[in-house]
Length: 151
Image (cartoon, rainbow, N blue to C red; front, side, top):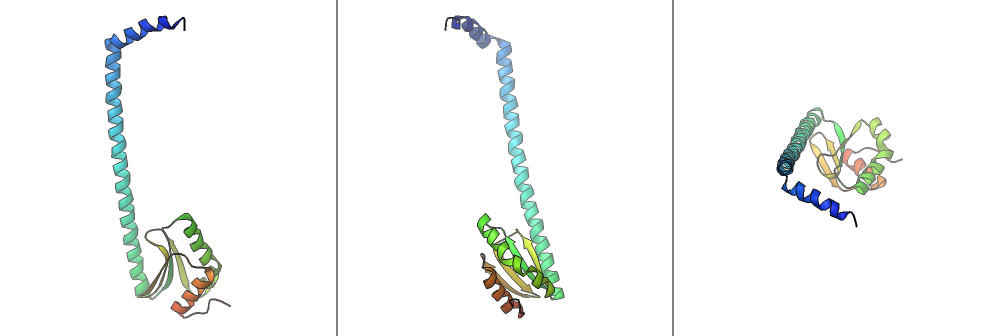
């Protein structure tokens, strides 16, 4: 406390010093430029995300036309959902993957749109929103593709 009086002249000098004021103005200008650049970066990132989504949707549409043209059997697992539901989706399809491969039914994982399953066979399609148990999913697959999945 007794040395506090030594700081007052330094504070007064720094407040009145034209060089300090110039540096403060430059600092404020640089901060403004940085803020402007950060907002431009955020806008560019949002634009890039939109473009990636558009390209992903176009790719999905192109693949869907291949499914129709070649009369393929495909299960699309749409993973654009919360962590818990995402885990449920994976747990329900995992035990059946080998059998589905033997039955020539492709399993595709996407996170473009929705949360659930999309069963496709050529132009026929069934959408199941949300996660099912492994047994319920197997029943849906058997019914849609007319195959025997469960033993």
